Image (tube, rainbow, N blue to C red; front, side, top):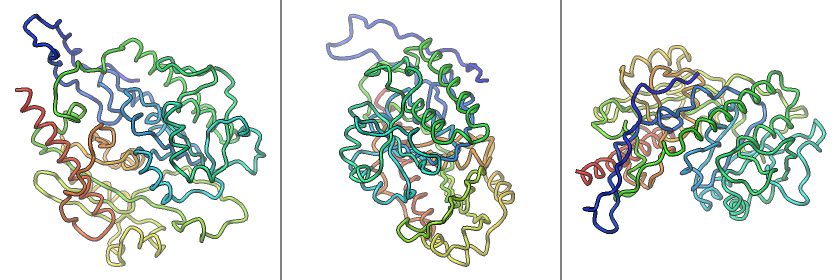
Length: 418
């Protein structure tokens, strides 16, 4: 169960006095400590409430950029809960380009309603999709996603017939049949794989957690908002961990094991769909750097996919590096030995955070996901040279640059507030 924070609630903001100049606003209270995983105020952190859901259907969530700014982000909850889920957040044009590069299952389908769209439950068991694409945003936002991402129009579409009205009491929906992203994913998985052992119970637990989180939010309607004040643009969401010397910040990136990594057009199609493993993907290559000292960590982890030449070429691992691979337990021991007691691990995407969490890579250290921060992310161009020629090293360099960028925003903001 989630326990309330020991810290007292933030002080209330006094009413503006007569000395304020026209157009100015009252200074905001001190920055409220936030969870580095769900990015909610600590007393409203819901991480411990979210259960693990062992789904077989791959779920790909395309989130409209503006939806990431919403303080009650149900797509983030889904990504935290599901074993097989990927969340991509970008502007529409960037999402369109990325979707052209993403390898989709041959039977991938879009969950999106329409007058002539069939129900997901109308499909025979052997024709159910192994991958569902879900659009996250307001109704207007999802319409623009469908319009601006051409690849979505080439995929089959299915809709849901929810057995009961949506229970999302925070945002007003257009009708009783409208569901939040979390509710839609729960309903879709229940329809798509009703035979999966234990799934119905896990989905029910996720819905119960959702109800509790809503109740918690309604009881604290303004606890996650700050008073409007003149501040450095984009600085207000930079978490406390990046507002200091950064001596306890370690930036990391990990490549995870894959199945057949080839594009669907050249991948041989099996006669019978193989069962999906319940074991979460494991890391195969890990790179990290301590931000202040520049101390680096690099390790290859044993995995069958490292025998696939195509996969090795994609991530840039040569035979010499593969020959140094260690077991997962040896990697955990070395990585935890690299980290210090008060370190925070910074990653760019939720996928890396999920890789850490599901494999217990660093269970005693908080993980900050930069994608949770609403701010300009144009810092990649200022990245330093990567430690080697691998894809992971380049992505690590970009993440380091972005971390430093966010930290500088916070420093500018602090100077301005003095």
